[in-house]
Image (cartoon, rainbow, N blue to C red; front, side, top):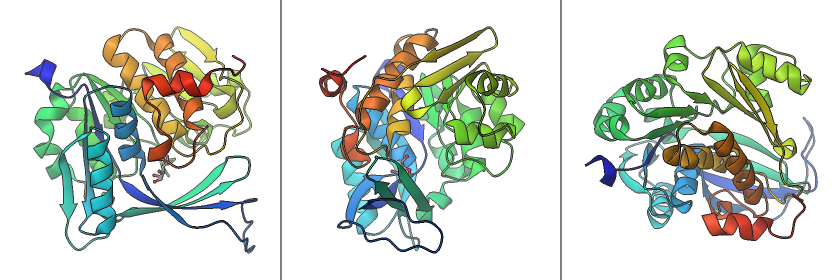
Length: 309
Ligand code: RIB
């Protein structure tokens, strides 16, 4: 049974992204005019599931949408990417999660999420999905759903647990979650929030901060600088390809999916997983939108071809 089940299970959020391009991000109190509004499938969990499936992995998504057009569109988007949505529930009387996204000329984004149905993902849904979660080689988690569901999923897993602590949590993660996680994948903002460290830290300081978490492995995503792998006995930076990003939305999500993708194949090869994840994340920034930007395995190399390593 196990070899026919999903290779990656993603427990997390699904959002409809409302995206506007802007010349620059507005400062508090400032109004800026942007481009035409676009409605694009997104949500960190759904993006990670879509990315894993596009990379060729049998993938299942556990989450919730509302009984509305947005929820229907998100379910269709996941299904057409090949994701198993048998544990995507439709929550009554609550809207589908929505993300308000501004993308500036340099590709950087700001995101405000209204969780909607994502807030209904609870221990009961995790219990329903337990047969999938406990059988999968790799479980992928983020923090856009309630913490109790994230912890319950991590505790139910028997394979590797990869957790992307995004968005940055307002308080330290519970010990029960950290103990169940094998690989934590924060960006610099999230690492700063988790460790109360200096946001202007050098790479050595970031590595030292990551080490204080006492995890088997921490992979800090560094945007254009690539990523930093920190284990109790190893510290290594993986540079990113030199590119000109058009939209960084979902780059962190495809990074996590690629990490999981490699760990399915070789659970002991974290350096190889990070090297692959950096390339997939970079390729994602070369296309616009969340779900539409997530590359297949061939598209990663195709998009990066001709660029300086
Ligand atoms: O990581 C990008 C995602 O964050 C967007 O798709 C948005 O929905 C938010 O969840």
